[in-house]
Image 1: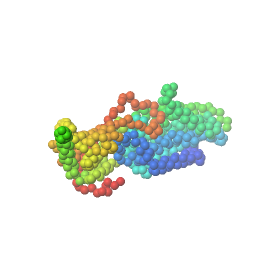
Image 2: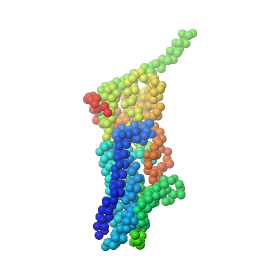
Image 3: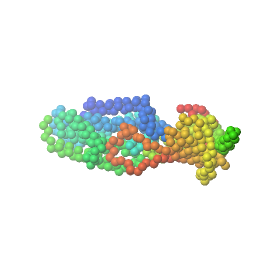
Image 4: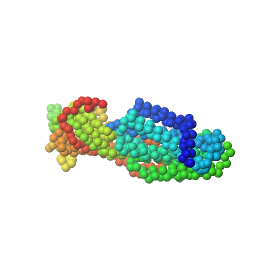
Length: 280
Length: 229
């Protein structure tokens, strides 16, 4: 029964035009970035390496598909939560606003199963987005720019990863990015349970992300205690896969915190949805 | 009186002229070995240990053809000193561009070497001073140190093996002065990083680049197309 409900929920997602907005937005944004890098990528690379090139010279193809995919991910992963929340934020509240939730609850399925099916459908949609981003960034990037070693710039300096050592890092990075976006999806569905209009949970989700990101970025001692536990702090953990040596402890810590957020948010949503007096 | 003074000045300058002549002879003998090489292709392994850069050893192929055609083909990203190994022969080949003097003897790699100080004639050039440690018995360059305006001091140790007769090294170890690299913060956007790897220790000032040469293909002819981009 749960899987039938998941299927129904996913059909409903695919029937909404806004669901394709996310895919379209990713396609356009990645297209623009790839075009810009193809036209003027070398000058961007020169800007990154200029400090090093006073003393050293880099030989080989610096601007390649692996670097392009990394740049695309770095630029877009911050904006994708909006695309996720746009769809998942009204999975419950949208039905409440249109009045279909009461009819839905007359089906022989428990409220817990119904809500879980919405969470799973939201997760599948998020997975579709991240897979599409992966195809465009990694596969199309490599087709257009070729393969090669990956040069990653982080605050500690440059890390040059060998070509054969990159694919598994992307797989790991995308898995962590998916988990981070799943937290956003869970948050927006949870908020959706508390609202009867479509737009509210989407806006509140984005407001929370912006607020937490600002708290995470502000170098104020007051926030030091809470910063490591904010899910937004761990949304960039996909980058850890591109460090050498691999900071496994940090990655596991991020996974635990993201999963903990999801469990708490799903639990909160289930509790509220089961107790909720559906009047619309 | 005046003629005595001129004689004294000339006598005083004699050792300098002699040192310059000897230095030129030593350089010519060393370069005679290099000039026997019309072209070569060689497999290299480049290992870089540079502060703030984490990288793995990279394999590449180097192509050289007289007079100064040089090309490195590597599938991966290799890091080399800005003044790499092609610059030195190129500079020394133009005898009008420098003045060389013997400035002493030193032991390098257990070999007694003659130390040559090479001063560029062009004051406005990037190269300020070049020092060469040459083994006078084998006419091999064992160490070099170049001081440039833009890149600081770069020194290189040369180890020989299979191609001693042509003066081509089997191993080169470069030591480069590393200035404090500045990371463009807008591009290093690990904004949510919760821990910093800054240990508080001062970062080393020198980087080391080791290049190991293997499988020299000497004077077998290399087409010009190889050197085109």
